[in-house]
Structures are given as structure tokens and as C-alpha cells.
Image (cartoon, rainbow, N blue to C red; front, top):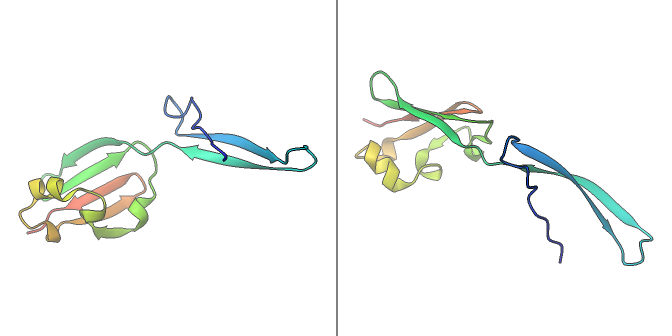
Length: 109
């Protein structure tokens, strides 16, 4: 079994850390190496209602993978219990990525 630990400096000040992994056979006659990048998960920096109270603008500390999709219903990103605090009909709430570090939660009618 091969076990790899997350670098100890990840999350302190860096959002990623590169580690060179080298795997060789028992007698050392052949080996292979690869660079592996560990990424810290993005954290929410702020979540603020817009002026009209119809949207929540969520900002992250670093680029995200856009939740795996450009625009979607929010159930894949936000728990139903949290959504129910924002809207009586959670199926009308939409999440729109306006950039890799900003998500806009559009509250339904």
C-alpha cells in the first residue's frame, strides 16, 4: 500500500503545495516519479445580501472549480436546511457563478 500525507505547510499560507513522488521497485533498478499538487479547499470570505435582499453574494479566498458546473440549482452546493432559511420554496433558488471566486445565490420568488 502507498500512503501519501498532505504536506504540513498546506493551509498555513499556501493554497497549494507540490510534492515529487518517486516509486521504485524493491531492488532499485527502475523507478518513476511524478509531481503531485495538493490543493487546500476554498474557504468562504464573505456572504452578503444585495441591496434588495434578493441575492446573496458569496466570495471565496481562492479560485474554485465552480462546484463542478457553471450554473445550477443550489442543492448541490448548499444544504437543503440552509436553503430553507433563505427561501420558502428551495426549488426556486439558483446558484450562478460570476467568477471562479464568487457565487451569487439568487433567491426565488
